[in-house]
Image 1: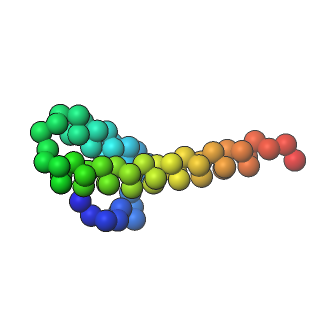
Image 2: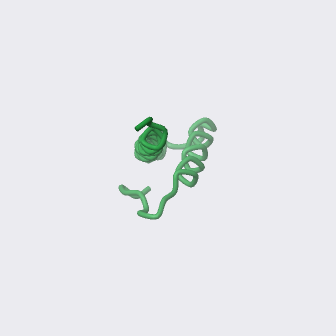
Length: 67
């Protein structure tokens, strides 16, 4: 796993990667080191997705605010 996420990563791709990580972790056939590395990548992807969702919510609020 890399320490950073690709600059062109989309929300949808990040979410798909998160789903794959969850599936792999749930299978339980990974070593401890592999599990920790996947968990760390999952944390990065979760933060990325949350930021994208927060930005989208802000944009929607700005568009729907009565002026």
